[in-house]
Structures are given as C-alpha cells and as structure tokens.
Image (cartoon, rainbow, N blue to C red; front, side, top):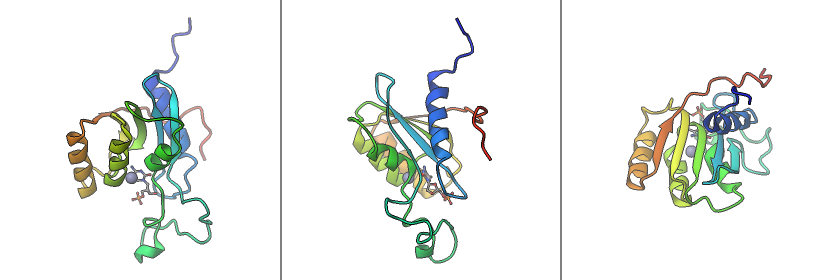
Length: 157
Ligand SMILES: Nc1nc(=O)n([C@H]2C[C@H](O)[C@@H](COP(=O)(O)O)O2)cc1CO
Ligand SMILES: [Zn+2]
C-alpha cells in the first residue's frame, strides 16, 4: 500500500487553497471548503464579486473612498461556500485559508457548522476577530489551526 497519501486535513485544506487561486483579489485570496460528517465535500467558495459585477465596474483596490474599494461589494469565501452548499450544513466543518470575519462567523454559526479549521489568522489583532471569537465561544463552535504549506503540485504564477 502506498504510504505517502495525504491526510484528510491536508486534502480539504488543499481544496480550499486551490479554490483561493480563483480569486481576483490582488491582495488577499481566500478559499473555503465545507465537509459534512461523512467527510464529503458539500460546499466550496472563494472571495469574489457578486454575480453580474463586471470587473471594469467594480474596484479591487483597498484604498480611497469606501465606495471605490472592494470592501462594500466582495463576497467572502466562507459566504460563497455556504451559499453554494448542496445540503444542510448541520454538524459540518469548514476549512478556510484565513480565519473568518465576524460577518461570516454569523453565517457559519447559523448554518450549523461546528468546527472551523484555518491556516492563517493574519487579522487576529482586529476588533472583528474579537467579535468572531466571542460569538464562536457562545455557539460552541471549535476552531483549529493547521499548516498545510504550498500546493506544490499546482503551477502557480
Ligand atoms: N475570512 C475572510 N474571507 C474572505 O473572503 N476575505 C476576503 C475579503 C477581501 O476580498 C479579502 C481581504 O482583503 P484585505 O482586507 O486583505 O485587503 O479577503 C477576508 C477574510 C478575512 O476575515
Ligand atoms: Zn467574512
């Protein structure tokens, strides 16, 4: 038997990372992969503009007037993964390349997801992160940090 096969964690985070490569955000690409209690993938997403938002009409920048930045428009990876779900998410886990913000945390809790597996928490110093942690604790949603590293088998340019 082959011994070097990848673990479930590496597999699902790998799928999340592969999805992140679809993002057009020049600064932060995020991917998410939701897995049910039978270890089946039931939702995938990455951060992108809402349907119908043409690239030349919506900005990807993060500076200047709020309405001229991506922030009011972009759909977060976790939200897209939840909205793309093929079944109830009760008792599922979400693998996400970046720790969820407070808004996605609400969606995660309300959809019945019980565990968040993440790789980066580069925004852990923010108030949004604090709010997310407070809600997750109240809802008994657990969090776990893993490190998967680069997707060496994908040609990333
Ligand atoms: N968990 C997350 N999922 C996401 O999909 N995002 C998206 C929203 C933006 O497109 C980008 C963050 O942009 P910036 O703040 O690094 O310029 O990542 C952000 C976070 C952070 O909480
Ligand atoms: Zn979010």
